[in-house]
Length: 299
Image (cartoon, rainbow, N blue to C red; front, side, top):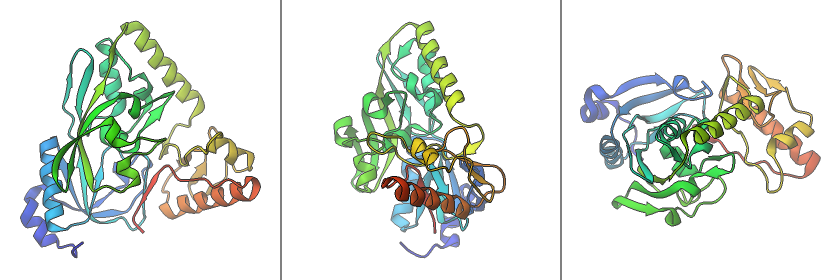
């Protein structure tokens, strides 16, 4: 990547470029330093154009949607953050096409009001379609692997359509994520089925209530660690005696130990110190290595 040049970026993007922007407000954990630049896009075509231009200029960038499952360092991001607000949606009889900036919970609710089932699991998912496609988001027995028909990506070769098989999905992972493919999700088509609106709404209400009963309120990144095969990260952390442990203003939740809650002006370094404590203690007690589910950006 080339050295960042704000004058060149100003020439390329004009008034679209915001400079020295704090990223804490754009993440669900409300943590993160500044980005050198931030550009907001509102359409998938605008997203493709912006990313293509950044690639051509060899400028480091970070694509942000809902900002969940993400920890941005206190030093921030040395490059351009592209905030994805591309939110067009089109429903058909048995599917929905959505741009990648649409939030999964909103899409789930829209489907339900139309009597279309299959996305109830996403009613409590805070991330966007793009992030869900990339990371195979899931909850309550459903996941993106079970819904995706195809996704439109921007790659080095241009715009491409990938099927669900092309994604090679695994638990909270995809070919895009595992192989660090240089690609951006522009939109996705998801399969749905006709159902009874009242029954769909009831399933969603039960999932939302279960989420409220079992997961903490407040600012967090979502699930911190992937569940080890045959076990649960939260159970292991709790069994290790770490529930309620606090470093600075970040706490391992007393409601669910796989959630780290921001109680104020929390620093990313305090989150990482708590992550390392949980990993070390669980390994010492149970011989299990906890793998992060969140992504860490910056130094």
